[in-house]
Image (tube, rainbow, N blue to C red; front, side, top):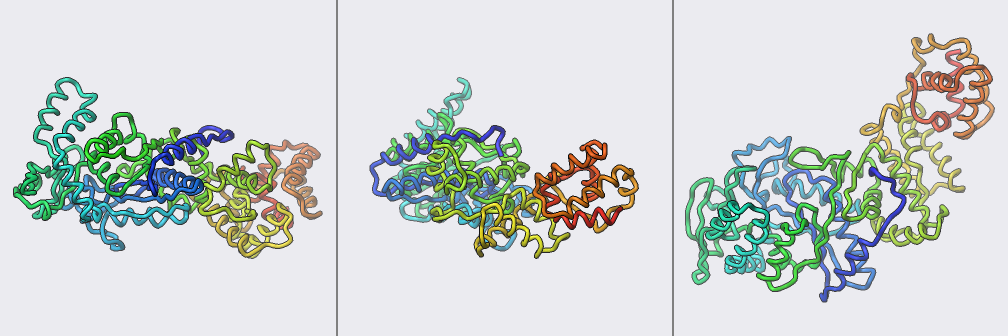
Length: 554
């Protein structure tokens, strides 16, 4: 899946983070995550969710009370619609996601639609965070009081913002920023007239910033940048939203967050996370959460982005691969290294995960270090507590072949051969219902994978009869070779390797090159010059079926 071999793993990042969180003197730990539902939420964000889940599990294992939380930032204003949305941007730019209708008609808002798509995938990935909607959080007395505290501490916040935001500005830029901050307040207002928090879209945003706050009368003044409405409102009647760098630490404080992972864009030194930690200390009088930076997940070497349409969702993943594999990749990659998902490598990755699982259960042998590693990490890879015994699984690469043979062999024959393969691999006397159920899931994922990401070599399409334009190319030597192959196949049930060996030996006995021998068989079966490894393909189809296919052209 990644660009480098995955043979050596390190769990130091897990131990280091958990130890730092456990050192906090609190009755209960809250590991929080958050995302703005601006469109499809790609699987890269699931890394943050899983990191939080791993920290929680380890804290619980150590005897602490801990839980996780997913904060949906649906109170953020719309800056642009993602590709494929038919709603008019002119009608909704600057409106909170929670106030924009769901054009698909299945959820209560635009923001809820995209957030729920992610939330629905949580059980499959073995995570169970509490869900908090920011739009509703801002309606609570605790959050409103925290917003009031921020407004009263505006001078402190101005100082912090200058310190962090202007840290890399030129002298001229810094002077301009300092001047602008003299009238800056840390909150914007949802206009009662037009429902917007700001005017303009990406690159030209003008927030409806609070212009003044009187702590004695508890009134705020603002001007709407979209419709021009100006008014003074009692604090309790205003729908307020803190600016991003202040909003984040305020939610930490209100919710009691003790740890939060964050992508490298927010966690960079002097960035929004560090800004939030200083706000936590100077405005709210507490240290804030433990900072956990992580690198992004990439897809095919590219950064995923909702706005640019480069997305690969958790639902997409579970359609082609087990979610446990994603947890495996997150756990076995250092948290500050990028994970580059290459969907075309899924079969290798699944089989690698299966081997790791077999080491944990003692089914496969391994050195002491790898066994110890499997015992430490595997319980964090599963969706829940590990089952007491190993559940035998069909190899994914074998499933890729068998799933494509259903139109040729029929469901009954395919399942029969899959059962036989599983029983032979694990010396089983019978196949349980649970094994059968997992077999069906694996076949479905394998078929979905090969249809979407498989190469021509992976794909299997078999014509009812061998086309005449192919049989016309067979020489006398080719036909003699095919006749001997058919004779060999009718003698019993050869293994994959026995088929491979026989093809080489029979080709040499006739005097044709092995490369041509394989090509002749591929053309006979698949009507093309190459395909999946021949031995497994012949065994999957059945030696008698292939022998009959050969006879049909001789």
